[in-house]
Amino acid sequence: MINRIAALKLIPMVVMDRADQADGFADALVAGGLPVAEITFRTPAAEASIRAIAKRGDVLVGAGTVLTIEQADRAIDAGAQFLVAPGTNPKVVDHVVKRGVPMMPGVVTPSEIELAMSLGATALKFFPAENMGGVDTLKAYAGPYADARFLPTGGITPELLPGYLKLNNVLACGGSWLAPRDLLAAGKFDDIRSRVQQAKNILAGIASVGNQL
Image (cartoon, rainbow, N blue to C red):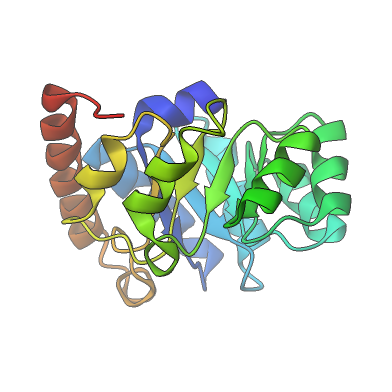
């Protein structure tokens, strides 16, 4: 699963207010060439949205902002294929790892990185990326934590994306600009598809240059 995420390079992060729009959103991702999404567990519609997308089978769907064991179980039972959290809660991480689902806990400091890795996490969310030093911080972590792979999220824009993805220790990036909440609420799936296609063009350009670190 982690390798599949690494191959896609970019995860649209979304807040779903209406589960009946999940299919339209998923259609836009597939049409745009980026069949992956992180549905944040911030609304009552999150669980049903994950279930609807998971049933399709053509989109890799995960749950974000997973803060409790109860949320983790609901997300997994709905079909979430990976879980992401803004921080590292040892009880939640341990529970998810035991259930056999990839969990990406959030980290910022060296101590948090070591804690998350000791719990069995193989990929770590770096959040909030831009507020915490962004690319320069991840470059610094490449030395002491050569085995750590990061999913930076928070403040990343299309302009900043290449700088992150050129780092060898960056697994993929999370982007909320691909499907903003207002576009989803308005059902503007063509606009979302266009944003995804533009992002795919950026990813193609990065791939032609190669990694830096």
